[in-house]
Length: 115
Image (tube, one colour):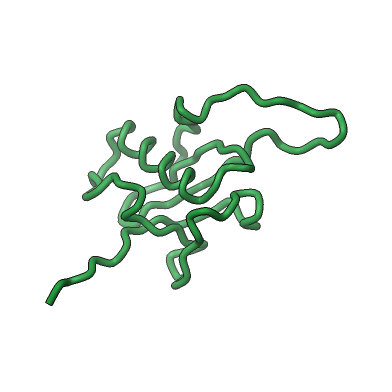
């Protein structure tokens, strides 16, 4: 159940290297979207944040014309979790290098009903 590893064109930038430390220039993340088959694999910079990862995953999913079609492609409508069983979502401004995992679960935020 593999997939393509892609980097959105907006995130493809040259990386400056320094000799004083050997850090990975990009990290590979696997994100499963609720109700979809397989994972989205995306390369991101360690300095990017959770919001950037959500946006990149949605762009790749939509560009790949994957099924089922997403009800909404606005990154602000989604939460990123460590797993489908985790109730706590990650903070949008959290740096990817600080997360401690490379596998995540993306789901729509619950709708607020106005009653």
